[in-house]
Length: 293
Ligand code: AMP
Image (cartoon, helix red, strand yellow):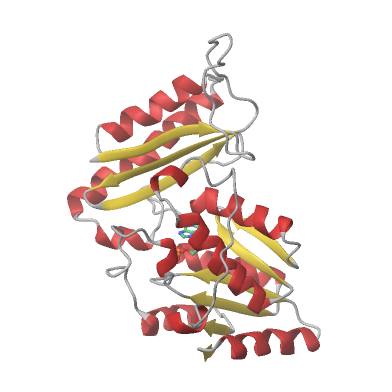
């Protein structure tokens, strides 16, 4: 596996692969890699002959009181894991290379960023879309793989790529979970044993909603209630537990005119963001689509 640090080297490697008739696969990450990230790398391999991974902890997507400075960083360990997953190239740029002196462009997607995590993390999605636009600009024509763990991020990136005619096919990969149900996350490293046990309430709540949906429950209020009950009993604070349209992300709420309780269709996104201890955790499932064991 080749390790490159400059945008020019990354672009040249991708161009060279395309000149040789290869497809480029790309997995952008912030490092502290786990099996969830490696599943994306293996997925990229199904679509491409040159599989590239980037590791860049993008300060622009962290709020002032978020965990940018203590976010786990382990480039040597990550490189080892990527070699094990047969990645071909690791792009690990310095902050000054991704945000050059004089740069002045920000990419902002509206609507999809105004719900769920949007109001709780002002500026977050603008930070994400700006850096992903830069990274996809360097990768060029390619297949980029993102996890459904960050469901809203995936929807926002799909929108950006479509709206800006970027020559990139976006592939969404299912959430990789521990046996316990806990969705893998670099931030799980922050959890104490007690917090880890309480963090299981997220997937437990989603499983309950999933079982209820399978038994015919279609009330958004009831489905949300099942998840909320689990999370509220275990988390230290909740940003949201929402049931939303999986495509538009608009939240199911009572019909304003009639006050009729909301009912979901054939598919519904159930999404959670909460804090366990100081750690912000997110999880989700699409009822009618994902299988939660
Ligand atoms: P991050 O390094 O947290 O920015 O994540 C990089 C990519 O890995 C994003 O597309 C995430 O959605 C994806 N990812 C993180 N955790 C998981 C997981 N447990 N299952 C699937 N994809 C994941």
